[in-house]
Length: 241
Image (cartoon, rainbow, N blue to C red):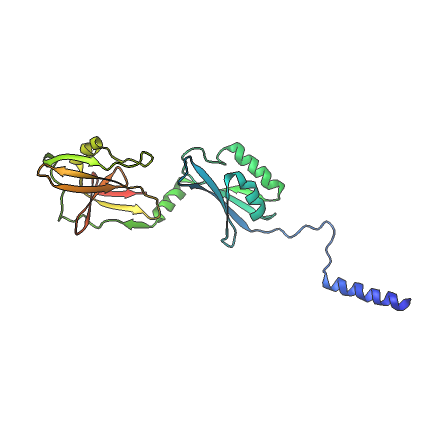
């Protein structure tokens, strides 16, 4: 019998060595990990839509629709972590999590899970710095002098290529004719990564020559020739965001 108790005692000591003891009621050590929550619009839908993205400290992104935000937080963010909410400064209207009531409700939800929610507003200075840091794709060097638009008096008509009513229209015949006398060679630059919808059309001169133009803004037109593309606007330099 004594041998039996001796063996049991050895087993208990072995198990105690394998599994470190934990005091009852002792909380896990708090973590300083920071997670970033952002909101992103979804293009191509009939009505505006958004998804939420949580990026872990390791850079791994979790993505879910706005209706699944609570589920997303439950899956991606552990207790004792900090969740930084960066809503951004640009609005088109109807964005989820954009009212004080919605943000207070989310803060309460996070608090129930032991998560600290911190809102990071974009100040005007931060917006200027971020916009200035965007890479820029140069569409044209200094405007070449080898090509000029026909004089306004030589223009017979202008026309816009018909396209879907759902797509942006930067010009119609009347507005392009009104802008035409003010157009001059211009340098056009465009922020990298933006989604562009192009409109095109034709300029017909009185001697029956045709110039085909295109644009993705109401600030300039571009003329394609066999050798180059030339840009014209009211201003000598134009930047398209």
